[in-house]
Structure formats: C-alpha cells, structure tokens
Length: 438
Image 1: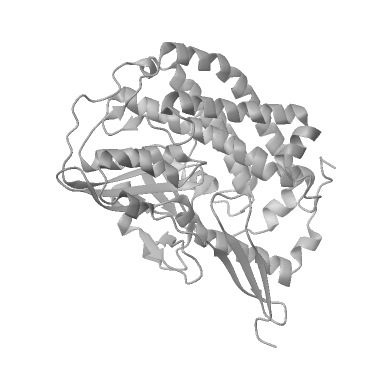
Image 2: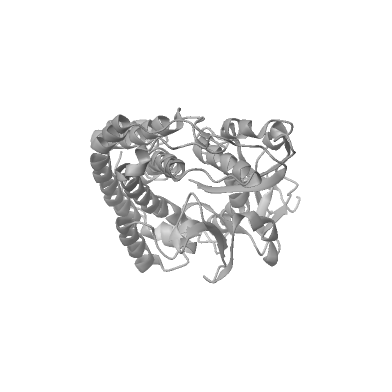
C-alpha cells in the first residue's frame, strides 16, 4: 500500500463562480496528507487587454465575472483614471457608489438565499433535492418571495445606473456616461423603504440560523489567518479607501494605499492550480496566508459606516470577538454588509447630487502612465493595475481578483475541516438542529 492510498475528489465544486475541484489525499492510516482546491481553467484577461485602448478596459473587464461585473467595471475605470491623473466630477463618484452598493446588495442576497440558506434550512445532511432555492420557495413562499424581490431591487438599480445589470457600460474614464434622472431616483426611493424592511427581516432569519447552528459555526473549520480589507478612516468601505491587513492575533500590521499593493502582496504559484495564491508578503508563504471577503472586511474595519449595520456588527463581536476566525461566520458577516449596502443606497438616493447632470469631464486626454484601481467585490478585494503608452494603449495589465486573495485561505480552512472530519470525527458530536424544510 502506498502512503496515500486513498484520494477523494469532488468535481466540480458547485455553488461557486468559475470552475473548481477539491482533492483530499489520505494516508493508509486515515490521516489527512493534503487538501487541494484545484482551479483548472484560465481566462487570460490580462493578455486580452494588452494592445487595447484603455477606454475599452471598463467594457472588457466585467466579463471576468457574471456575478459581480460592476466591481470589475469600476476597478478598471479607476485604474485608467489613476494612470492618466483624472479626477471625475463628484456626481459621478456618487453614481459609482450607488452602482457598487446595488451590486453588493444583490449579490449578498443571492449568496445568502440561493447558495447558503438551502444547506442551513434543509440541513447539511438533508435530501439534496431540498437543498436548493427552488425547494425553499416551495416550502417557504413568503421567504422566497422576499428573497426574489430583494435580488430584483439590486439588479434593477444596477441596470438603471450601469446601463445593464450584467456587464455595465456607463462608467468611463472621466465620469459616468448617463446622468441619473429624477424620475428614476423617485421610482427607487418608493421601493427602498420596503426593501430595507425586508433586509431587516433577513437579519432576523439569519440570526435564527446562527443560533440554530451555533455549534458547527463556532467549532468547525475555525481557521486563523491574516485578513485583508478596505476601510475609510476605520469605517468598512467598498469603493475607495486604504487597504488594511490584520494578523491572526488581531493586530493591524499594514495600512496602505492600493497603489502600493506590490509591497504587501506576495504571489505563490502552486503546482496543482492555475490560480495563484496571494498572501501577506512580509510574513512569507504559507505563514502569511490571508483571506478577503465579508468576514475579513469586518475584522479589519473598526466599525460599519451606517448605524443599523454597526448595531449588527457589535452584536456579532459581542458573540464571537475580534478577529473572528470561524469560517461559517462569513455568512453572518454577509448579512451585516447587506444592511450597510441598503442603508448607503437609501442615503445616496436622497442625496440631491445623485441627479446632477454634471457627471462627465468634457475633455479626457490619454497619456503614458500606470495606475491602480481598487474596489471591494462581494467576495473580496480587486486590484486592476494598467500601464499605458502615450496614445493611451494598454501595454501591460495586472489583475488580482477575489479568488486569488482567498484561495490559499480556502485550502487552509478545508485542511482544518478535513482533519476534524477524517481524523478527529468532530462532526459526529456537533449539535445540529431539526431541518426547517423536510
């Protein structure tokens, strides 16, 4: 018998953007030898952009992801503006903030209700036929209706600001192509109060899930890592701010402008995956493995940017502390960000400048330079770094997307979970509630 006489492969890994496989290698004595998260596809977007006029980047980059094209759209625009020393009008900044929060809201609602909730409501060991969003809608029609309305609101708002809900087109170097009309603003203002109410109902549902699954949340796949996220004067931020790195003990070890990312980002290329592992460079690999995404942002931020979200964050910290290493707490963090997104959307819709006609500079001149655009996508920090020549043509591009920031952390948490399951049999003693859907 070989030392690794058993290999478990899960292919494809579902409920994930892109293509992935999970490989678990066990020794003949049942010990976990290795856990690999394999990304077996390549997309070549950095090469696609070479030789293109930089104005095309905000239309090409959103194709990287069909779930979160808005963050790529805005990161690309910001990178070009940084390379060409462009400052867009204030109204354009507000529209971009509205666009990214619309996507944040829609994506978090989609993730919670369609990707996470089925396992919690039907039970992780329940009938797979019940562990899907269709079964939830059938068994809990009121919850299903609420989920669909929330997702629709976010998608409708993204389409109204971005021109399209998927692969938006309105953000361009120098501003936004389409002003936001008073008529559109008023239509969304009429809807936002009800959606805000539904968001708070979602918080109640999520808290019930957390309480029911407290044992696995606090015991399974608890994985200390570094954390990466954006903040603005300590407030959780998703559009523009500094990047902060927190170590596993909760100490902030770096706080820097995105343009300086290369000093702090390390890149490791594993043999088993095409996706590079990004980590905290000063700590080295694998010691410096970090995670991005919702929980990482909540860990590095001192507080939320809006009042109701701050109350929700404080409740989470009272229960789990700071930093929180519980992998399943990402779901709880996602709901807290959902609250901040709807609060920010409401504030932006009520801002008189959101309907300003002054949304684009009249004269934008290309130049030789390089610039970094950074935003937070729902699942982690995005970096777009472009170099352009005198004609404004991209000569080089570097992109660090959420998957790169998270994949090493994913493998680490999977290793922890695999050892608990195969070696310690910890899952056999976890307290699980009776399924809400049977």
